[in-house]
Amino acid sequence: MEFQPTEHQHVRFNPLRGDWVLVSPHRMKRPWAGQVEKAAEEEIPIHDPKNPLCPRVSRPNGEVNPDYTSTYVFTNDFPALLEDVPAPPESDDPLFRSAKARGTCRVMCFHPHTNVTIPLMSKEEITAVIDRWIDELHNLGKKYLWVQIFENKGAVMGCSNPHPHCQIWASSFMPNEPRLKDENQKEYYLKYGRPMLMDYVKKELESKERLVITNDHWVALVPYWAVWPYETMLLPRRHLKRMVDMTADEKGALADIMKKLTTKYDNLFKCSFPYSMGWHGAPTGPQMQSDASHWVFHGCYYPPLLRSATVKKFMVGYEMLAQAQRDLTAEQAAQTLRTLPDVHYKTQ
Image 1 (spheres, rainbow, N blue to C red):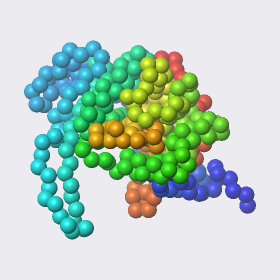
Image 2 (cartoon, one colour):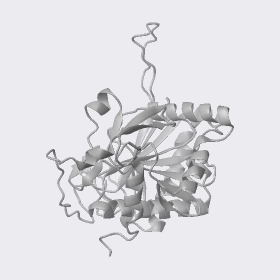
Image 3 (cartoon, one colour):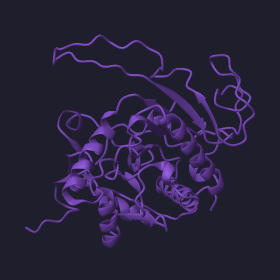
Image 4 (cartoon, rainbow, N blue to C red):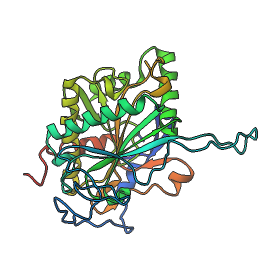
């Protein structure tokens, strides 16, 4: 029997994390009788006087948001990281180790209107978001080793507020995901003398199998080692180490490809497509002056929906106890996304 990647299970290696994902495409044929998510979208008003992220609304700590007209950033009222806390006592016991963790958490509103999302914003409005991300990364990166920008979109991804926003957590320590990427990219660079992700994007542009959208400066693709059903990466055509390295043209092109990619997501199942997304680049703070030639700045989108707007992928059981597993192949996912229109279904 000849191996068929769309029919036969196999494992794929993720060189960024140094681990494997099990691909089981034949499972897409099985019937589904499990949990489904609500399909109908709620009617969200432009402005909600009870929503603490809206302009002119009082937050839980009593502060009133300004009447902002573009982006707005404030320190999270319930942060996971604080700047001034005592460090735990040192221990020589290898089984009971702890270390200091200092930082800050910020919330960034993308837009004053509650009923918009990235795909429904204009390219200029998204560029303003990117500019503010760069400002925050620049300022927080002066002090902190890692600045994590991320967006949780949709209640199914744990977002408790429908207002368009993201979070920015800056920490004195290197979190696990970027630490793994740092180690594996460095190992690849020392072995081959080239940044891993620049080699990778070059090969993806040649094969075209997993491309979703491309423009003069950016490539949106489903990574060969994708875990989530319609997971994508945004990669630069030029070697960028950090978000702050972008030119004006690259920022505009990034806004354009973000809008088109998230529009395709929404068009897939005719819903406001949920996801968690974020950016990874070279560390900051005390490592700003270190050689970061192995790093390539990139974005990651992790959406949970698999079969429809009402069926999501659960990371449980085997995924928690063994390793990641997916059903449809990265190539199948890319083909599906690639053929979707760039115009949002609500504006067609």
